[in-house]
Amino acid sequence: MPDLTAPAPGGVATAAGFRVIYHAPVCPDCASPDVTTGEVETGDGLAETALTCRACGTAWPMACVAEWGGPQ
Image (tube, rainbow, N blue to C red; front, side, top):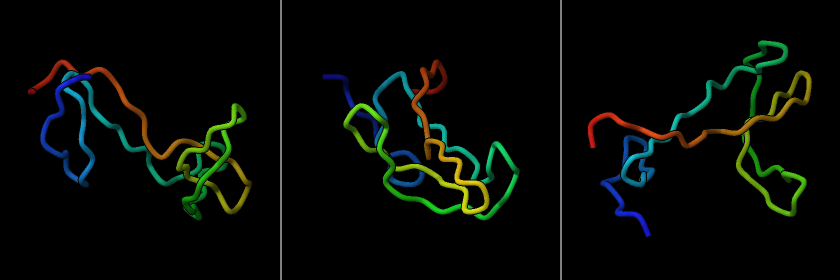
């Protein structure tokens, strides 16, 4: 199990060497700012918290985890 660092701004703990990148609450398909959050089925039996556009129905992850070589 990786060592956990102190919670990042927003209260999300990150594993050493990784960071959480939050996606903008603007639809990537139609550019609408009319966005909500909720649990969305991923298709493989799992659900994740996602942003969903009320105008066109597009859903995308609320955040992603990326490798981070910056300050630890």
